[in-house]
Amino acid sequence: MALMTEGPRRAVQTADAWAMGLALDEARRAVQSGDVPVGAVVVGPSGEVVARGHNVREALDDPTGHAEVVALRAAADRLGRWRLDDCTLVVTLEPCLMCAGAIVLARVPRLVLGAWDPKAGACGSQWDVVRDRRLNHRVEVVGGVRADECGLLLQHFFEAQREAAAFSDGL
Ligand SMILES: [Zn+2]
Image 1 (cartoon, rainbow, N blue to C red):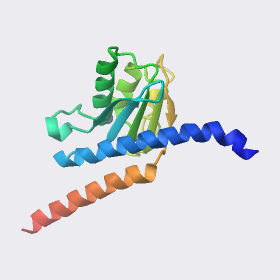
Image 2: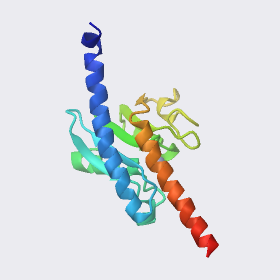
Image 3: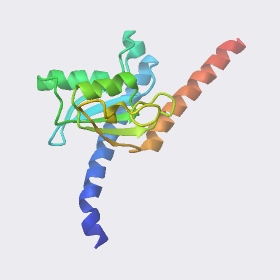
């Protein structure tokens, strides 16, 4: 009986987990340019991947080059419209203030995030821009999808950076 009622919910969670796997693949690509490993994908209404993006701040010397902005721009370009009101944004780390703002401006109705960002997160941690009652658009937030994998990727990246810094200090 429990399986009957949990079926649909489980199916949705599986789709989110699958999409998060693609976002994790994107995140890993960021490391090649020394960028913080954050990845995002935009999923369309039929569950198809519309666009992908990873952090390119270092790669392009672009302070706005966050994975979410890259993916939202690519999705809008591909669909030929800025309004992404039938899409889901899936991202490995809780979006910052800028990206939360971009999600609202793109009218994205649903956000799936991996690891929470207690220091700079703007989707429930430090701020909750995407569910701010003063805005006319609010976003459904599904948090903690494959959070351990998303968090470990970041943790290992920053550990390696600290080790490299300590090594160069020692020379
Ligand atoms: Zn951001």
